[in-house]
Length: 140
Image 1 (tube, rainbow, N blue to C red):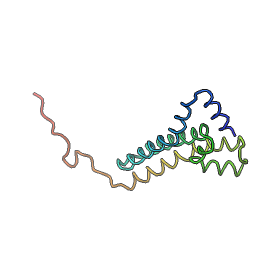
Image 2 (image 1 turned 120 degrees about the vertical axis):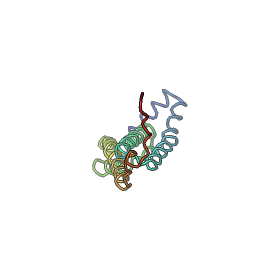
Image 3 (image 1 turned 180 degrees about the vertical axis):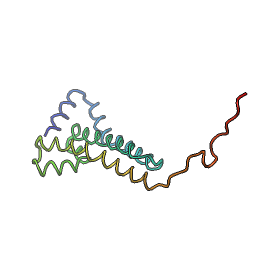
Image 4 (image 1 turned 180 degrees about the horizontal axis):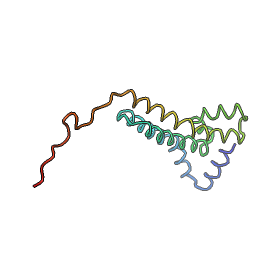
């Protein structure tokens, strides 16, 4: 597999630093992405935030697939299933389908999810219509 080759080369080149990167990709980055997702939901961010978060998830998934053998496949299960079904397991077709699926699936899901959440929330009237704007002081 391509990921094993990359992982072995990085381990020989970086040593223990590679292990920190690999464990960080599989531990710290998902926690960060989850925190961003929760913040986005609580603050009612719109579809552009969902698109951005989806791109972050896609980049994370692709990096996991390239840098972490075997366990790096978990964030990429949709692409692995599609690529394995159409091109066979361990082929370049599967490698490419993992990254194309990540690039298309996660940003579109984020955009759709945060867009739907934004449409389901009641619209707030502008602050000047409800008397919440600061009073303008006349200049002399």
